[in-house]
Length: 379
Image 1 (cartoon, one colour):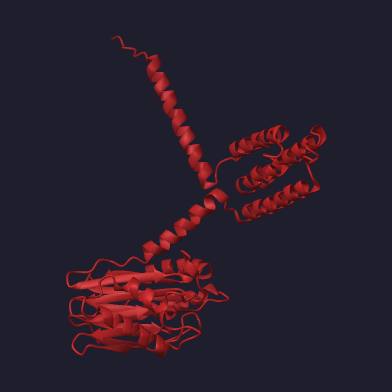
Image 2 (cartoon, rainbow, N blue to C red):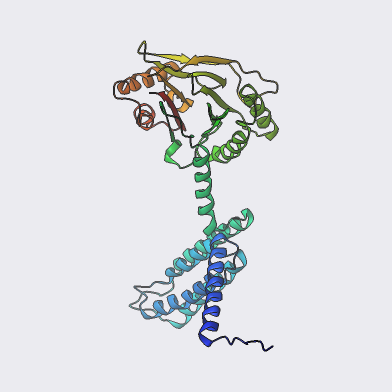
């Protein structure tokens, strides 16, 4: 029985080879962006830029001065490994020597001055320090920005509140200190007990901004794993034990744990050194402080946390926040609470939808501290 032999056409072979080349280039580009690939492409490009700049200096020294060599040197410090950076600097030094020896003075202006040599040398030394620092940390420059972006997005995703059933509204606003993208305040939340219970933990890590962001990321992941895995009254003791095991120099945190029954509106607030919550009662039209007792997290082992109970009736609002919103070196906690409730009264008639961000802007816009505000409303 004869077997049919299929002959591959030239077009098919070229299409397959083109596909392999395209996949290889894509993989190389992704590896380079992530910092896993070789830096030879950037090295070759920068090495070619050196003679190009030298040629420009020889042709028009007034428009292309020798100090223009700092441009590829700066790029080398950001993109290349330390060994490649040294090769790049050797090429730049050779270009300066050629420019100084080949070209004579134009219009009585020396082409290469001692100042040019000092500028190029100083920039080269700074670039080498940057390259060595990146190599020691293990984060290439082209990957560092992406890692920071991933860090910010991970904290933001972990702070996202779950959807609530009809008749409930929730919103969260977070403003890091100094207009940064990273904060020491974070929220973890989950629907437990078959979706009938909402558990929310608002935490303020010691420090602020970038100083507290890495610890906030670690704690938010740990707290998110604990939330819903333990009975509500065991959450803060477990979180306290976890924080103590980290043995950080500045390792304390404040936290408040809300356990809300979405069917009845009954809730418990369990606090660990956190500012009190504020509840607006639609029946009386007044704000009431809901302050539970409990020590800071990460201070001592065996801490006990006593809950405070309450009920959210239709039209009621519960606000939880961090101390940056209501307390500062220039005002006491009581003054900050009065100011927050005074601004919140403006939204009683129109509703609190979209009010969290505006309240932070009105109460603590220029405060140099992390600020977070969580609102739970029963329509």
